[in-house]
View (cartoon, rainbow, N blue to C red):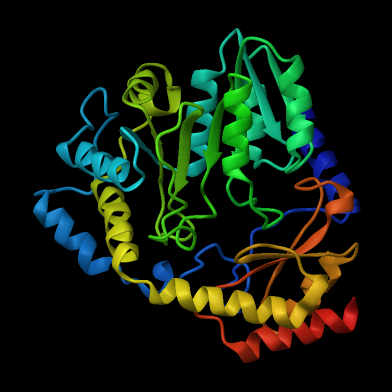
Amino acid sequence: MDQFQRWMQEELKEREHQGLLRQTADYSRWIDFCSNDYLGIGRDRVLEASIEMWLKEWNCASYSSGGSRLISGHAAHHEAVERFIATQHQTEAALLFDSGYMANHGLITALGKRGTTFLLDAHCHSSIVRSAHQSQADHVYKFAHNRLDALEQKLRTTKGRIIVYVERVYSMDGDCADISSLLEMCSLYDAQLIVDEAHAFGWQGPQRIGMVHAPHKALLARVFTYGKGAGCHGASIAGSRMLRDYLVNFSAPFIYTTATTPHLVAAIRSAYDYLLVHAERTAALLDNIAYWKNHMGASTAGDGPIQIIRHPQAGALAAMAQSEGLGVKAILPPTVKPEHTCLRVCLHSYQKQEDMQRLIALIQQNL
């Protein structure tokens, strides 16, 4: 065994010794309390007919793109769906990416040049934090989670181009950012705000595709991820036409990645089409959230489908639930700090109340 093999083995053994070894697992045999398919659009395959319709409409003979959009992969359907997305989110333009992680990385590293400072909410997703540190930005600072006073303290002492990055709904906390107040504060200090909308899509806003915001001088971009409430995959960045042009020229993940396939573009368009006319799944999801919070009381936290139960033995609690056929996940270090170890329960439109009650009873007996 060479030195690199030994080094990897030692790292894995240490992680296992800490009880934090990550492993892939097939959760399909359990009752789903962990997936991000909040509305069940992915599991019910309700988009299939619409996807085929759009592929025929666009006369797509292949599922392959064949190259990056700056070489051979670009097609009229990319721009058509991007214009549609921009219209739905009341912005000038949008740009498609293959995943939320790549959208955040492509946006942050393109903007993170000398003279830029990122101010990140302390609970921002790894894709945001890692990308900011990998950029060429002068500084990357975190401010206390959802604390406007902590952000203002940073803004008062920060110079140059300032970008504040937050999530509409925090994936490891389930709570929401106060976007209106953040926009006011960013305007006051000549900063720009970027909002990751990944976990808001499908249940927030009057059209269930995120909250509506009119154009605002401090709102630089919003990132929409489609692998959650939309039940498919991919992402888009919505903002000004100038931002889109800038990303086409400076975002490495866009420039050097094979273009989003016609099938995925059709799936994204179909998800919007479905959500814009079907309110019943979101209504069922909200009913289940209310049922859960009513029965769990103060022991659960979260404003939407992500519900958090802080518990030092969350791993053992998750294993206990899984042994009962309830597919719930514990969130452990290093994903979160030790004091934030928790059971992360994802609720869905298709959840049965009797299944929720089983999980509630198990949790309450072991708190």
